Image 1 (cartoon, rainbow, N blue to C red):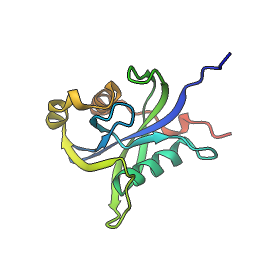
Image 2: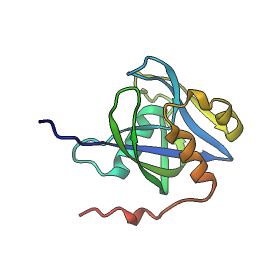
Image 3: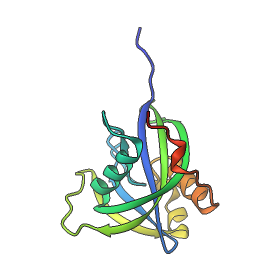
Length: 150
């Protein structure tokens, strides 16, 4: 009998002057080109915050400041049946690394305003993308010390 376990992931909602940092990427499961926040899996030995910094840098070339937690969510992908336990962080851009080598699945980096994002809503990787931005826009942000590092 197999044991069910969710996959731990992180994402960042990076906002600057009412524009949001999104990646355009190829979904490995469906092959479709989709939009997503910088996001990825937690690696062994790293904290949630470390994973958020790393994933954002690997996928966008941006160093960021993390300011809080927008949400913790469970999402089961209809494409592959996998459940993701996702912690989404709020943050701001610090600086872009001009010669950063991005993950191979990344097609392009975009700074989009809310209207541009909603116009692409059918192309979001999951409903969590738009929901996270809407939570950030409504002011939802929990302090980072909610995370206990024991």
